[in-house]
Image 1: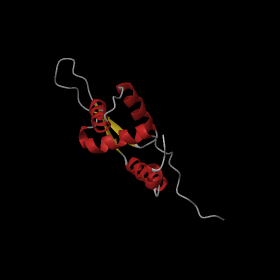
Image 2: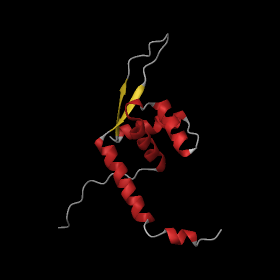
Image 3: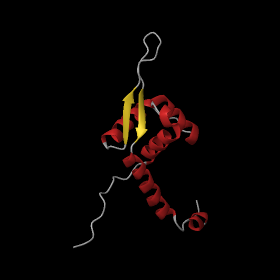
Image 4: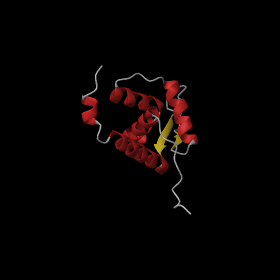
Length: 117
């Protein structure tokens, strides 16, 4: 009988990695708008807020993040914010994703310098 492997996590896409990393960078201040700003600041790419919330919902269903609602803001019509936190499984998925990409990159730098347009 072959040795058992740990359960396989689905590979993270680049955008999912960016979301999870932004949550880690932001700590307790990670909600939709701040996550968007963090990604845009670090990558230089505009990100649609709808794409962020859709992907965060998917990451929560996968069990990689958890969310909580704040109290409503103390202004007229103030709304609650939905804050996101990385779960241990999310941290493990990031580590695994980094490991896989590092393994794929290993030994390629010189090959990339030799490629032609």
